[in-house]
Image (tube, rainbow, N blue to C red; front, side, top):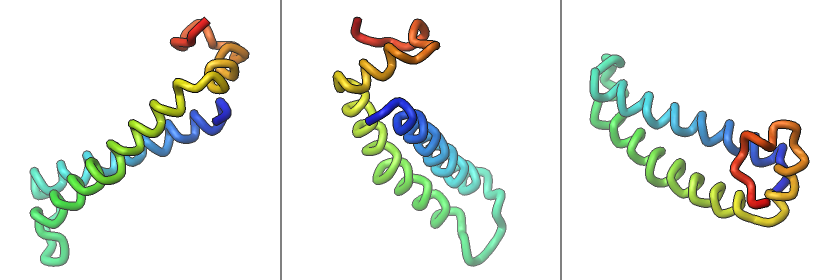
Amino acid sequence: MTQSEFFWNCKIGGLLAVASAATILMARFQIVQSKQFPPLVLFATGVFLMFRVFVPWVFTCLRRFNTAEMNADMKRHPLSKFFIVER
């Protein structure tokens, strides 16, 4: 995985985390008052996103991050001193 792919994956993962947290909060505080989306449905959707989509994505991303190819890409990055990279 290249550096560019890694950062795009991080952006996608961030969006997934925000989406799942937003649906859980909407359910908790009953922001959406609708018969189509009762709080229990919103809460279940948020939990589903969190544990079936976001959490496995994080572990996949971290596993790929530890590869030698990724470390080599990160060493060439101008901000590499801010990243944790095996040297």
